[in-house]
Image 1 (spheres, helix red, strand yellow):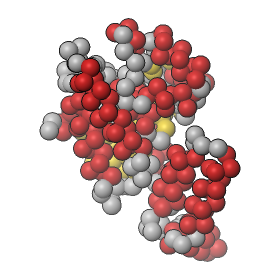
Image 2 (cartoon, one colour):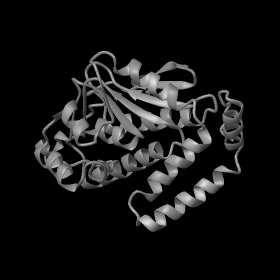
Image 3 (cartoon, one colour):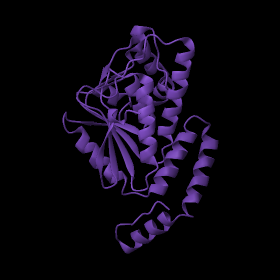
Image 4 (cartoon, one colour):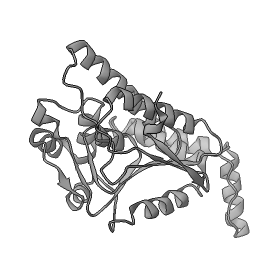
Length: 255
């Protein structure tokens, strides 16, 4: 397996930085397999508190679909891609994407599966596959619609146009905008700050948001109630409350 396609920067404060270059010379399936292997490996390491995905100067994971696919091959690729995105979504640790160039196609599919996206003001986003008669295939159409609304998602998919970072921020596709060249450093600072919080509460909070997002409000609030109560069985909750009373920084263990 060519793990070399994705490089892992040595961790800083328990943060793993996974660089996925804008490589157009490998197949989508090959890249999906590598990403799944790397993210799953990092997720299973107790010393890793959070994941930061980023790209290179030529973009973030711009990998085209092979034109020679049969209908069966296409269905298989889509199924594999969707399962990879679900595994990223359920990784159980903070996972954010920092974009400093173009994030389109498969790259945007991956970004949408993470917790949220930050980007430089020079970044661009979109699903250009329509120009080749294609649509998103790793769950991107569904995640995009849930994030920015049906009509805006249809506009982006139908047109294939790339939008700039300002527009992406305006419609809620990305969370934060940074000056060009500062995105990765700012993103590292942000995720490092997030990872000072309770890993247990972050995992439970993420699960509640994901599970409750597309169900009725009353049922979703019941999920929140049960998850909130569960927090009181954890070491992190007791440590957090005691640290507050002692006016000191808590020492969370993720337990």
